[in-house]
Amino acid sequence: VLKENRLFLSCLANFSPSLRTEIAFRFFSDDIVYYNPEESSYLKDGLKFLQQNSLKKEVFLCSMQKLGTGIKDLKISFSSDMHQNLTTVVYDNFETRLETEESTGIKKLVELVALMMDVLRNDKILLADNLDVDFHEAVIQYVVNTFNKAKANKKAQLVFTTHDVILLDNK
Image (cartoon, rainbow, N blue to C red; front, side, top):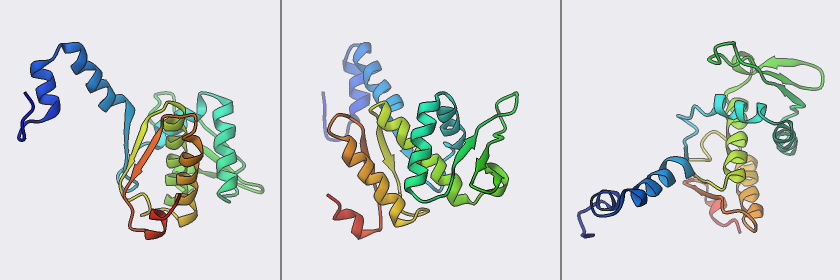
């Protein structure tokens, strides 16, 4: 059934019971998360993820502190139709609107850390293309180390491309 020029999922769909095909499809659609910092639109989903539970938000804020952002809190809210993000970022002496007043780097960092938490919590696979493009080396090191520390009791995985050869030597 499997030959050199046949796609695996195509063969599975044609020659296996539909339950096997459904399981494989669910794996690819639900368990693999693709992240490209240059094209991602996970910010809204990431904020909803943090809004669901105060413990998740506390873990997130702890991560932001470890990364030295100075962020003390996020006041997460959405418009009544859930299309517009109205989140406020709280620092020691001032507050900013995430959507309009924060840098692209902070927005991407909020997005990445929330996504990483979701992937780790739900034992998913995070595929990240050019993970080092928009982030400081310390952020990428933090992400890699977080996945490495979690692997003892989690099935979550991080697979990424990078141009930073220092990351390739990380143990």
